[in-house]
Amino acid sequence: MNTFEGKVTIVTGGSSGLGAAAALQFAREGAKVVIAARRKDKSEAVVRQIEQLGTEGLFLQTDVSKRVEVEAASQVRKAGLRGQQRRYRGPSAIASGGD
Image (tube, rainbow, N blue to C red):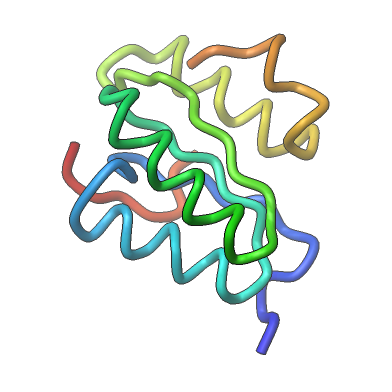
Protein backbone atom coordinates (compact mmCIF):
# COMPACT_ATOMS: atom_id res chain seq x y z
CA MET A 1 0.00 0.00 0.00
CA ASN A 2 1.40 3.40 -1.00
CA THR A 3 -0.52 5.69 1.32
CA PHE A 4 2.13 8.42 1.09
CA GLU A 5 3.02 8.12 -2.62
CA GLY A 6 4.10 11.53 -3.93
CA LYS A 7 4.36 13.02 -0.43
CA VAL A 8 7.41 14.31 1.42
CA THR A 9 7.62 13.61 5.13
CA ILE A 10 9.98 15.14 7.65
CA VAL A 11 10.97 13.03 10.62
CA THR A 12 12.74 14.80 13.46
CA GLY A 13 15.02 12.60 15.47
CA GLY A 14 15.00 10.12 12.62
CA SER A 15 18.55 8.91 13.17
CA SER A 16 17.59 6.08 15.53
CA GLY A 17 14.88 4.42 17.60
CA LEU A 18 11.25 5.35 17.00
CA GLY A 19 12.22 8.17 14.64
CA ALA A 20 14.16 5.81 12.37
CA ALA A 21 11.32 3.27 12.53
CA ALA A 22 8.80 5.94 11.53
CA ALA A 23 11.03 7.14 8.67
CA LEU A 24 11.36 3.63 7.30
CA GLN A 25 7.61 3.02 7.56
CA PHE A 26 6.87 6.25 5.67
CA ALA A 27 9.31 5.07 2.98
CA ARG A 28 7.62 1.65 2.77
CA GLU A 29 4.35 3.49 2.18
CA GLY A 30 5.83 5.46 -0.73
CA ALA A 31 6.90 8.74 0.88
CA LYS A 32 10.07 10.63 0.19
CA VAL A 33 11.64 11.10 3.62
CA VAL A 34 13.68 13.91 5.12
CA ILE A 35 15.62 12.94 8.24
CA ALA A 36 16.03 16.05 10.40
CA ALA A 37 18.46 15.15 13.15
CA ARG A 38 21.81 16.01 14.68
CA ARG A 39 23.77 12.78 14.19
CA LYS A 40 25.12 12.62 10.65
CA ASP A 41 26.51 9.08 10.62
CA LYS A 42 23.37 7.42 11.97
CA SER A 43 21.06 9.61 9.86
CA GLU A 44 22.92 8.81 6.65
CA ALA A 45 22.61 5.10 7.46
CA VAL A 46 18.82 5.51 7.73
CA VAL A 47 18.79 7.42 4.42
CA ARG A 48 20.60 4.50 2.75
CA GLN A 49 17.93 2.12 4.10
CA ILE A 50 15.21 4.43 2.76
CA GLU A 51 16.83 4.45 -0.67
CA GLN A 52 17.05 0.64 -0.62
CA LEU A 53 13.27 0.65 -0.22
CA GLY A 54 13.04 2.46 -3.57
CA THR A 55 12.26 6.02 -2.56
CA GLU A 56 14.20 9.21 -1.91
CA GLY A 57 15.78 10.03 1.41
CA LEU A 58 17.62 13.15 2.52
CA PHE A 59 19.48 14.04 5.70
CA LEU A 60 19.37 17.61 7.00
CA GLN A 61 21.52 18.22 10.03
CA THR A 62 19.03 19.94 12.30
CA ASP A 63 18.79 21.16 15.85
CA VAL A 64 15.05 21.46 16.49
CA SER A 65 15.70 23.94 19.29
CA LYS A 66 16.76 26.45 16.57
CA ARG A 67 13.76 27.93 14.84
CA VAL A 68 15.63 28.90 11.67
CA GLU A 69 16.70 25.28 11.11
CA VAL A 70 13.16 23.98 11.55
CA GLU A 71 11.79 26.60 9.15
CA ALA A 72 14.43 25.72 6.55
CA ALA A 73 13.48 22.05 6.64
CA SER A 74 9.82 22.87 6.15
CA GLN A 75 10.82 24.65 2.93
CA VAL A 76 12.47 21.44 1.69
CA ARG A 77 9.19 19.59 2.25
CA LYS A 78 7.26 22.23 0.30
CA ALA A 79 9.75 22.23 -2.58
CA GLY A 80 9.91 18.48 -3.05
CA LEU A 81 13.21 16.98 -2.01
CA ARG A 82 16.27 16.57 -4.20
CA GLY A 83 15.98 19.97 -5.85
CA GLN A 84 16.56 21.69 -2.53
CA GLN A 85 19.18 19.59 -0.81
CA ARG A 86 22.07 21.98 -1.46
CA ARG A 87 20.08 25.09 -0.74
CA TYR A 88 18.77 24.28 2.72
CA ARG A 89 20.62 22.89 5.67
CA GLY A 90 18.82 22.49 8.57
CA PRO A 91 13.65 21.76 9.16
CA SER A 92 7.17 20.90 10.32
CA ALA A 93 7.67 17.61 11.91
CA ILE A 94 5.34 14.85 10.85
CA ALA A 95 6.95 12.32 13.13
CA SER A 96 9.36 12.83 15.97
CA GLY A 97 11.70 10.39 17.61
CA GLY A 98 14.66 10.71 19.92
CA ASP A 99 17.97 12.00 18.61
